[in-house]
Image (tube, rainbow, N blue to C red; front, side, top):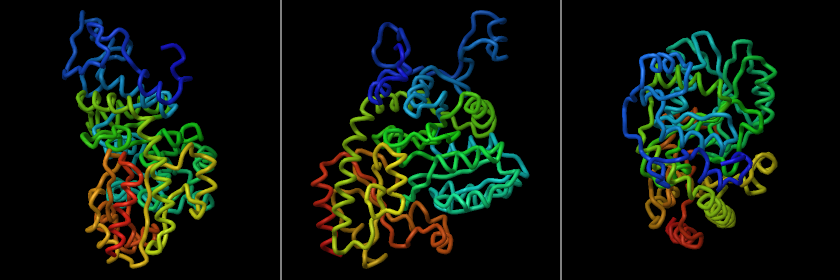
Length: 397
């Protein structure tokens, strides 16, 4: 489609990357369920392997169904290119293994998804990579941590699970001023519906597409998005040679199908999230609500500046602390007690004992992850029904 990059988000989600014509005129994207591809001549095979001619050689390096999904995500994030992986951690680890070597330095925010924190805090040092953990909501802390050997600044905004907001444009500027430093942002919580970090100067975006991008809780997937030069490196080094975290074509097809409703899903969910956050902020048993759309949130002004909407995720703490939180989790009926996020169903969980159990209590305290924090992933149910379920559960606390 002509000028697809200039079309609206919903149009890009549906029409971006579509193969024209599809096999036999099929409207839906075909699933190319193949491991390898044939060549017409030995010379053509040589050119494809030498990257002198575009083409598919083996599905670990590329597959037509994956290409459609990748082009859609690149359009949504307003990046030059995207790479599909078999999970969000596949995307993150493929990026890190591509650009880091022994002796390199990483600056990471203290507040991260638990498995990302485990990778950076407990495993990277085994390979000679040093990681400094700072509060990237304070640009001075990032500036002071920069070194000549700093290769990556890694962060989430809003962060998992306390919804901390970071000034992405300012952090990216600091990275660029330092020279060969890439700013990598996990945009899973915001999604490209609410925020596009690449347009703010960041270099690479990673996603767990398992979540709101797919939207139906029936697959694992990840994406890497950025300039084509960077994404090509991740494809050839991090994915093909190091992690092998390849997304199967069936999962790519399901992502393509889920993206057809991406904008309308996110419009509904984000509107509901605001209503739920406002309800919780007024409840007498709730101590604090962590949601960037509330003026009480410390990152509210920055969120207004860099986000199209305030997103679908929130955290909250009860005045009764951890025990009250456990009682709430045991009392919900409509909300599902489960990890992950981005399903059609509203999901609720306790980070300190579930997704962020890899942090020690001291590390959680340093990252401002309260022991009693409850994380809520708003789904597609009616707002009044989600609120009614929280109300009846809070009445039992």
